[in-house]
Image (cartoon, rainbow, N blue to C red):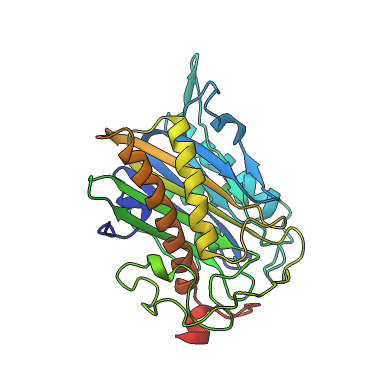
Length: 329
């Protein structure tokens, strides 16, 4: 397994990602889409999720493919980012065909960033406009850290952010992850700079510090955020030809990566969620080996992407938490 050329989820051929954020709002959103509809699924492990159209992603539902996936700040208000994306896609003539109408399918998930110091005194929900702007900005290369859905994110100890990573398997399959890290838990070990995800790091992508020399094995962590203030939301993607059930299994396996990179994770106070996306460009060579390796790769790239989100976060005036670089860099 090696990192892809960009070490971004867009190393999966055909995928593009766009961000939009507002400095005064201290929030933003991120959209992932492809050249054509793609197979999608979801796995929810957190106790406080905020979602749109996730019921549609069950394998027994009518629609098996989606047009885009959206990650957004803004708590429940941020779900409106998907409306902006849907409006933009409809204007492009994209969406599920119903007679002479097109209905874009845009599942979304949100994180809570309403108490991060930004000005939330809007008269009109701003997230639909942010969603449309993110769609229009979509491309293969995009910013990490303090950007998009991770613009106003925080963890239990340090600033959160937007992360991504990729892996190319020996079979030729590419797997990538995109994540907005706003966790109740911590991405780093104790009070030090080492990342929990260090055993999976490739090419010093988040500092190359290696594993922590020691860790608090008997620690009993306390919640440092209030109820409803946390959540890590992610997308894992591949160019493999997966059914919706197989994509759901990839999302389920990827949750292991979240647990490896954030301690604690999947708490009652988090809305931790992983979408899966499969473009279907590469047929499976082995129906047993390939899904097995894809699941492992999904967990590994998500752990790496989470660490990169925190590592790449940058300081802004009015921050309520230090960023990793300011504290350790």
